[in-house]
Image (tube, rainbow, N blue to C red; front, top):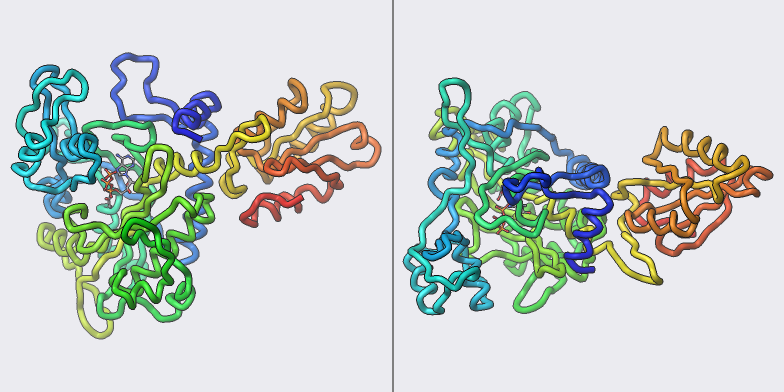
Length: 488
Ligand code: ATP
Ligand code: GLY
């Protein structure tokens, strides 16, 4: 489906909507999740915890969103977290220069070029204001952090632009209290804030957004324990090479020099497997190594996990090898000792990160799952992500059927996110559940009153089976423990 179809679904069925939408001064780039959106996001994070945090024995923290100015002096964000901008001299519209030139030329323009080079490209391609056709001024750099004033004295502080800074500043305490050993992966799910110049496309480019980040601290001399790597050794990564995507096993990718070491190869495999389980279409998935000018200022090597949608390829995860850049920076500014013992020596660990955008991931999963077929709209979410797990209906709204259906609903909702509906035709009720991705529906009919069975209908195949009511909960448990839709 297209972006517009997903937007209609999101707005009409309560997945997400613009924040403060009743006011005309609502700033762009802020969106609210509705009931189904919150449930989908919670399940997405549950899956992330299962497939990454628990699978790899990581620990998780939750840091504050406002952080001291010193953090961003040390991290380099005060100096370097800036985008190139240009303003129209006629209508004053401000735009991201790299994207503006990309749109005009159809080529990827790096985000980190010298200001003079952007000025030259604007002139060379005669780029003008896309809104009014006016001439453009000179290019300048715009720092994207939100400054806040804390307390009555108004001390300068900042909303964190990436969640991982909390992990870096907490590292010495965490390593000590958790009796850490390298490699030491620390995860966090939380909000980040960036004053984006042109927020757009709903969840794709926000000013306030969720990240689920994993920072793996390790000794570069002994990058990964052999046993862990064995799990993924022959697993095939989808690497963007040349014009296409090549499937290369984790071991071959390291041996061919496409990936710097086994630790990075292992974590790229975990993240690819995660998206497979989250229902992203693997035919439209790739891991792309970034060129020198595309990388963030702190990264030595970087890979983007990208997914193709109706809007083009979208970056979902930035996988950055940050070396000892962050811990060294914080050690220099805070004077704290960031060294730890490993293999009989004191070292400042290196960091490899998986920085996942949660909102963008949710959009892409919804777009890939949304289908129009056989005269119905159906959101084929993996059962593990379904906001509502089971619909319960009486076939008709009379006699003893509603009472019996409510009884089943009340019992199922203790263990499952269930939804009860008795209004309208049964066909319409199924359609409404299909559209929001409910994997199965239970229907109570006249036979139920006689033999204590119900029909169980599968969202994707629309097949129905009869099942004894006492077996319902265990059948649903099997479904939600597994990864695929119920095969009836
Ligand atoms: P882009 O090039 O699209 O601006 P980025 O390279 O600046 O993204 P990173 O700094 O690498 O993004 O951030 C890590 C992840 O956080 C991204 O892969 C993305 O999923 C998410 N992310 C970053 N900025 C935004 C945003 N403005 N809105 C939503 N998600 C974002
Ligand atoms: N922590 C990496 C990023 O937000 O870009």
